[in-house]
Length: 348
Length: 195
Image (cartoon, rainbow over the protein chains, first blue to last red):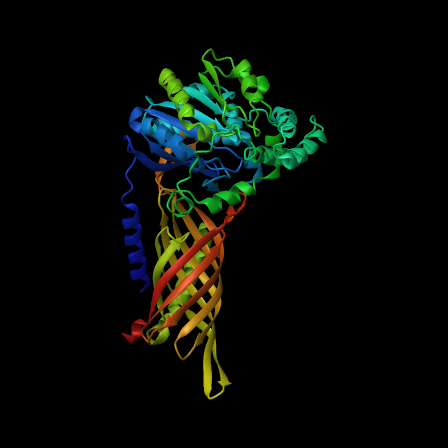
């Protein structure tokens, strides 16, 4: 009996999995692969126009997010129509898995994962493809750490930093200033006075030279909360594919992904909170596009201006979106995509 | 972990073999849909061995209500596919308590499970081996997976019944901790010896 059961399971196994063909470069790619780096298995989900030979490697935010969160809204539809988008997860986040010691969860280990992913993309799709890395928020921290390590950036055709947090201590200081300044203006105008009073009182009590990770977390929460208070912003167009679809019909596993992101090791979170790369930005020499929301209270635009000044590349651009907050891809998707297309078509 | 998988498999085979002797009499084979996060499809096959059972009678007005209760062990093997993410092969044993009403054959069961899940990455896995990238199909990792289960169903006649089972589980030593998983099963139980 057990033999028959085993045979039946074997047949089911083969039937359920036999239809996986890869790699299949086309104008409508829809496939996944993994990169195994030591004890971590890192997934990459590839969608869009691979025939363009241009691959945008999305480095997600967080820490604790996942790549497929960025596959939503009109911006990703537009970009997938022109290029292949690679939504990858970082170790201990998203759908990545493995048996990790806490000491293996570091920014440098994640940089090595990205390096391996870039090499794998070329191994899989050919050395003639152009890879652009796009890091949003925390993805801007990680992407910057990649850019300044050895000669890794030379594997890429360009770097796109979207509201990226490449200097967390600076971020916190600038955020305090922004809350005091714009919050003060909103208070004077009588807008959302209870919210602004609470936040201004909090930041006025901070020692900006010594902001703890807990205080940083509170500031980050304020940053997201403020997005709901400002009338200057365009309505977010970051429509997800729908909750049920997201939960049950995509390669994503939101519950497992969410839990992994919530329980990141404290030593790693402390490393993130102290990460400052402003002094190393001069090492970036490849074409760079910096995209920032004017009303980004999570990663203030001051970091974008600072990066623009410090990056050595002669081909660098800073785009500030007047009606956007932390995610200009959702607030002003058409303009956001137009700038990316112009950049990529120039440097691919 | 591979050794543990083997042990669990052997335990399952052992239990099945023990059940084999009186299987033709009244031990069921369960075959059912095994849905990872409900909608990612799979199949699960198992059996159940009652290692202790008793009957409880209660007098109610003019009738006697009879309930059959048991403590059971249920070895199972399951397989599912989460498209473009992974496939899972599970060897599992549930240990639980079941109570059934004799009149209509409805029953409920509560159990804890201990399983070993082999998670196969979808597509190719590119392995970094000292700076060289090697492509591998069916790369996998194994996870110990305890679970909590609630099941209800009905013995329709002496040949067959149906069941529905919900499971909350956690892969242990997953990243640096544990994961959260859920499964839904819908299936039939057959007493093959009665056909």
